Image (cartoon, rainbow, N blue to C red):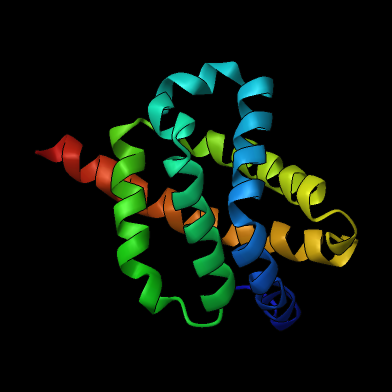
Length: 147
């Protein structure tokens, strides 16, 4: 699903994401809430203010980068996030917004290290992961609707 080149590049960014992850995700939320203020109501703003939400996302992004070639260990994390997304009514069409803001934040924070190759690899990796979440969340929405 993801090219070997993308896997190699994304894995190579893991140390940078471990070091700058919270700065990247804090910047991502800043960009997203500025460009898409309507999304704010889906977020616990106290978790934004105290930094716990950006920290959790930073951990998830780092985990994905470091495990992109071995996703089964991330299944529990994906499950937890997918259920949280369903609780907060995350929609499939919101994934491109988050992706665009995340990539912009990576460029802003990583500066020279966010080469075209890195951004292209992360674009492919993010799109692949968003499909996993959209499909899983769709299954959860469907099972909830049936009960």
